[in-house]
Image 1: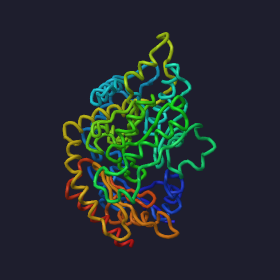
Image 2 (image 1 turned 135 degrees about the vertical axis):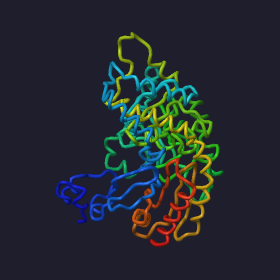
Image 3 (image 1 turned 45 degrees about the vertical axis):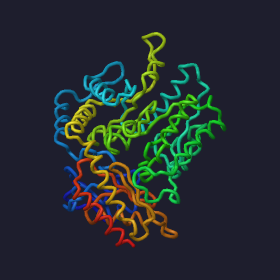
Image 4 (image 1 turned 90 degrees about the vertical axis):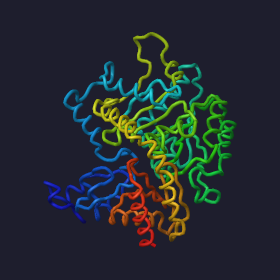
Length: 448
């Protein structure tokens, strides 16, 4: 087993490696050849052996303003000098109210309340519970059914994996998943949309499958549909032109709440605050996390339309309206980071920068067409993916080897199944985009 250099640990290095059960990681293989980072600044990590690693995935789709932005770091340090923690039940701190107001004000479109969580997984479970409780509060408690989508990723809570469509995430827990859940098909069809630039022109008709589920289950039993406007974790699956608009129409027609999971797509990833700004499609509930603090402190939440909040605000005022929450909902440090991050995004014009860089990344990623075993390239905003022909009898091994090669040669990317995904911070330069794609191209050729 490979171990970390003794300088990184005061304990026995091998024991230190063995102690951590890493999430979504092949632990045994990783610990034979660990990839460890020890520092970050701007667009770069520093590896444990001192090499700069260009961060091609904004950490994990979260460090949208780059690493250790001085304004965000300073805000967290100032907050520590004033207030470290305040309970969110029956009391609250000033930064929580301030951030909520800034978020709802920036989002607009009827979103007047936000419920804070600590992560995207918690934001999703919160949204699902709000949807179910909303219908019950309106005397429509027969709406118990939740809909998701194939290949959807909505975190790892039992609610999230129930509505999610990642088979590997679900199969070990099938007996404990929520009842009455059904799924729309995904929109990923290589035969019809391979090498699309931006939104594919084919595929809007796939939204009509929602009408099929309505006919199958009856609308009176369906509480909500949750989808990612762009499916990031499945490998940057971009919505076809007209698809989201039709989904919104069908949900409105049948009284089904539409929940957007914007944990990845929020805060500039597709060149706007949220998808509603880019696509003109407004959900009833919007889940966010990751980029809200640029990854500095964990924070998530659910933005809700005013009519939903108002439905809960009935009955005696001394009674709790919604029995849900977390010890660290709206943590002071997280809120301070969130306020600073919003200021950075605005003052530095980072959402506009993302839109300006979109065609640069688009041209770069599609330049990989024709490289060995590449069967698709696709993009939206500052997100892109390359999909590969599977290696016979070795599912996902090709993409994993490309990921390893990239890291060893100075770039962090993400692999899932047969796909390499990239989603750099909004501060990336055109030269760094070129550098990132060059490293990826060399990796593809080397692995081939």
